Length: 133
Image (spheres, rainbow, N blue to C red):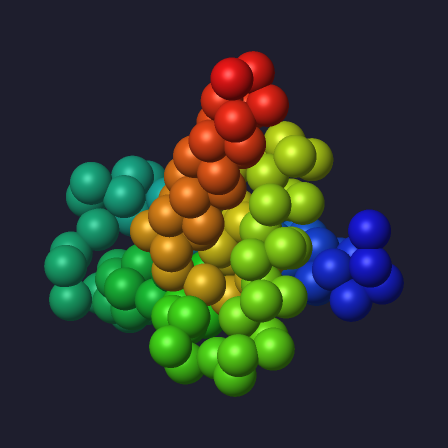
């Protein structure tokens, strides 16, 4: 596998790891705010909606961490990169990645990765039929 593809996979795994950590911190903050309500009002259910603790909790709940990946199309890429992406998608498919993960790693829309894999499988089937004929 090419070094560039290995770097793309490593970057994808790093982004996922960072998101998991942000998600963990988010829930720890929510839990800490709930404990503040419990300490002050004996229960979060007894806390008034306009209390500072409840307002902080509502503000924090409105800002969960989000995981975003770029979603380019083949037409967005130069021709040489489009050819490279086709090869990388097939290589990742053979390594056991699903089309959504391949899309995240390569920065493509999932449907495009599905189409690349589907076209590749059809080409293999056509080549096998020619050999067997």
